[in-house]
Image (cartoon, rainbow, N blue to C red; front, side, top):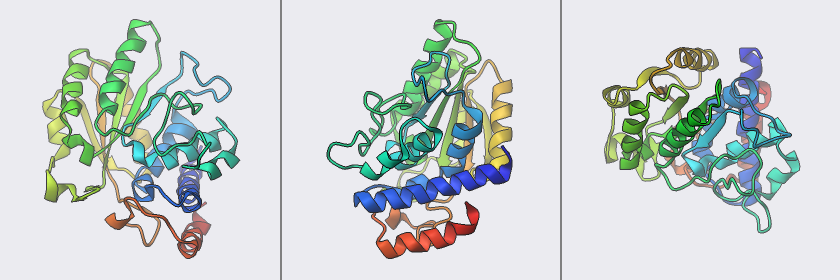
Length: 273
């Protein structure tokens, strides 16, 4: 795909989130917007997936460690063909399999249960090691982790283990929008500068603009060249990206768009999809 095509997919996913969270009357739209471009590259170009066979052993794995951003994962899975798009309208509704956090036992294409923050890198480490032990080659485990959840100790226990086992098939994206539910990460329990922390844990580290499709692509290609270290791609992002009233506004960490705000989002994204 071209950069423009992937950018349009990312913005389509953003609007899917606005519309479905509005229908649900609940959800976390802001955290979805900062990772939309990463999601577009992974799901619509990079990852080896088979919607007809979601448990294909040779597939790439994806873990959304910041599980509250699941509306954009659900949108990507629906757009990729894992389940009918109409199912998105049931988000957080009684009887729907699209719960407020991802559930691998109910949703095709979801590789792990997530939502309890901080666990994704550890789960990804286990998956990457497990694939290697089973002799599964040429596949990768991708994880998206928020910067607020990097305050969790289990992140760094997993970082040590992944480096010890030289898991070159593990690629983590750090969504560095400098927001968590209670405010700015740098005001609460800052872990900045983030790249230095991961460098100290013997990971292969890159820093990019997390909204630059070309940079995301190139960073993945560089990560794949490193076979004896896990990789982290530190992505400078904007919470609420491309939705005018959400951009860098932490009030939209968990909030429901009104019908009027849905229309504003549609207008803002109209020429970007």
